[in-house]
View 1 (cartoon, rainbow, N blue to C red):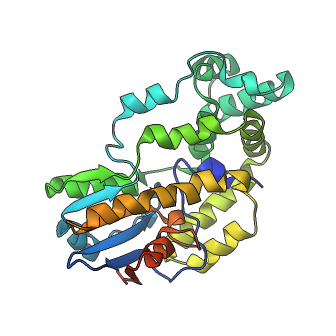
View 2: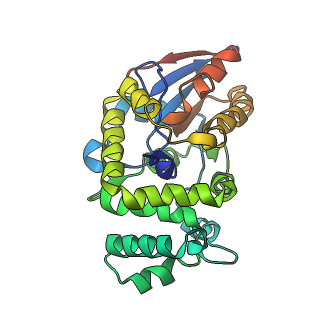
Length: 281
């Protein structure tokens, strides 16, 4: 079931056999000590866990560095999600289009014609977000935004390793047939996607990295997109992280899926000579 790529906008929480922790201490040649934390971008409030030790580490940092800063700027985000021309549904056959519209209308509890009009000018990948209408019932917490808020309250500078423009451009580059395929699989198998999502959240909450690894390794969700979604971005971040760590004690917070594996941030930092060790919190 090719569902996890659809969750990328909110949850990059795929781990590949790493130490059983989401928090790591980074030591290099400089005296400054930095930290790397794996986040889940969206989680039910009942499973939200942010202990005082984590808050204390953030408060002592010179700078907090997220994947993308200023996530609350919804105006800019909406503009990036809007098509310059054409329709969101152009990537589907007439029959597929009807299925997607009926699915979305049912999910939102509106009429099909209302759904079509509301999403017609949006980019196709925004349809991937709709599956969360069913999954994320009740209060939710955005871990990245929680970190950003804590930093701002302590008057700690917040920056990003990349821009939201770059992140969303990855989906713009995805072949339309591949994007349509992802969306249609969610439409046809909503229950399976929800089960996968719930498992991911539970494993993350327990810091059960082996189970998370098994979940992703038993599927082929990322396919040809894995290099753009994970590997390439990880490699792009390392020089930026190194430059910051020369002069500052940083708290880096990125999707946990970027931490593990031979091309993960942890290994890439170790390859550069940094001592990266897990921290219990």
